[in-house]
Length: 500
Length: 52
Image (cartoon, rainbow over all chains, first blue to last red; front, side, top):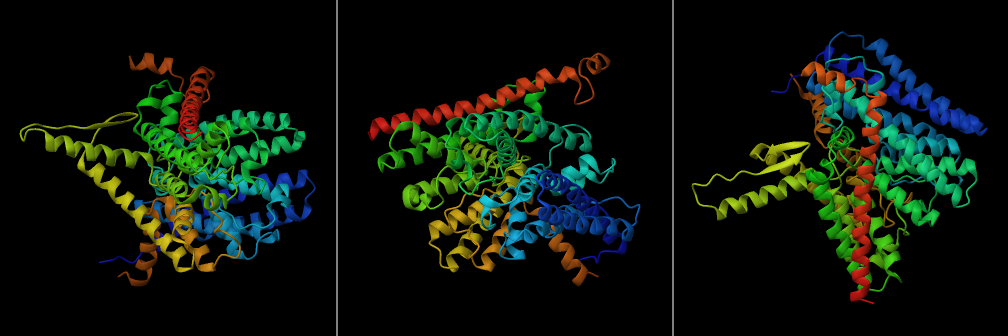
């Protein structure tokens, strides 16, 4: 029997959702100050309106939903998924008011893409967007990468017992430190330290490439944010191909690979367990699958004579595949080059890379290396068991910060989530095919959206059917939050209507 | 032992004693990415040898 939520349940969900939205409103201070600094007054007004909307909602719910009740598990999941929807709807205001979006749906698509660190966009005339709006695009992808709930946890929640439940609802289920608030702060520490180094390195490279100091600093910051969050937004429509620089490419690769690491791995490596980088199941799995896919794509591209020399071949092949595998979405080739130059095998390799994705509890999307690693270990475990005498006890372990025994519940959970991703990939592919796109292109673009990657083969355009825009938005949301909290929100909605 | 350990590892995340560890960690992570880049370059060289 489904229980109808009580008034107290609505109040606690409203209260905490409001807190997260206040956090989103506060984030808009950054693009607002950028707009003021560059005398972009129209853009500044757009952000004032956006902030006002967030604060009216946020503080309004604080007043309307006064309660001392703390969060339960189901509340945490509903707050996590619900606040992403509200944050998308309100965060889209500055996008829509800028005049660069074809409709409010397009604006919401771009904001959902930003929060979920996907990187697909429908914004028009990107090369002439104001600094303020460009800053907002990158701030929301950077914030979304850490998790907008993590922001609220780190800075707005005061040590509530329910905080961990919202944190888990956002798809991050590992505690770096015993206290969840300190875990959120450690996540931000790692991100901010990398921000300082990555920003400086990319800005200096931009200066060396001939950019003006202000432009180099802004581009350095934005490309860092796009890379670290594995978001894939870049300030120019040519994405990172705009820079035509091997140094810029290497730096961005280092940042987005580091950005795709599990925060638990970061914390282990940063606190002295440096061997973790070669022992962890996620880094091992990532290295094996990426190198195998690079091998496949590189050999096909070389056989077809697409690139003239080995260095260019390595640069193009590795960059797109590493970007796809980390679910970043940066690209140094034109979108249609996937279709016209890379061909079905190259696109398939990239699609597989995007589908697998990078690490759990990171800024990345996709099935995740840990699940692929666990399933592979389970497969070899079964083979060993079959080949061993009946009386033999076969044990398998995997390493993730510590040695963990491979047990059936772990394998079952990994299989369930993997299956959910595969079904979602199939559904978005079918949606594309039903709208008349070739299956390879529909699969590539659909998997890119659902795995929060953002590489495009030219399907995602403002002229794309509205149903596909909505399907991709739902896929991005489901993929980022890893299903459970979204299902909890749906269940919450159903229980309001049908519960007893 | 527990008391000694709490003295050795500063409690605050931003304590100056922690920063050398943080920087070494960052370098280790960057080295991992560079190894993958080097592997890709070797693969491309091999591909060009097979398909000149």
